[in-house]
Length: 177
Image 1 (cartoon, rainbow, N blue to C red):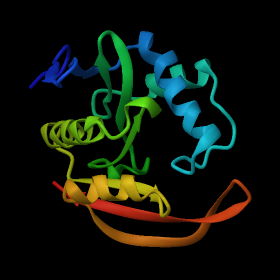
Image 2: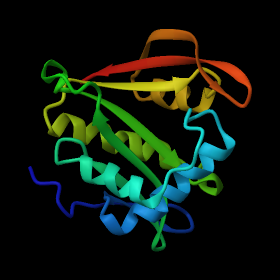
Image 3: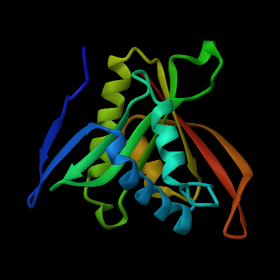
Image 4: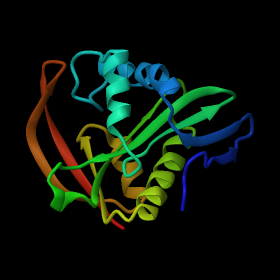
């Protein structure tokens, strides 16, 4: 099944929502959403904002087996998600890690759930076996989102990350497909 140019349309009370494959033209919007969380949140342990060149390289590294999706509302990118290589060793080829970032002003509108459902669907269609999600233990919404989609906690690493002058735990969740 080809996913090129495949879109999903969702109607909300106020606007149409489309989930589609990301293109290089989406890199700046993806980067803006991500960099907001670099500055303000523990949902990423990145300490420095990424450059547009870094985001383009990241997009280029995602091939057909590791899609990057964007959510558009009224022509604006309001969220993005990806399936990334979990581990570069070939024995892990059918295990992927997901990422989901929703623009701050659009959190709580159901976008994250729609995007995660689409990523799960894509992972199955691509023949992946399991999806791993890593979340800062203080990110209750992310953990709850994944749990609502059948992910289960499989590990908790204590004080492995540091941001905003505090040690942070990471929770690993897994969904077998």
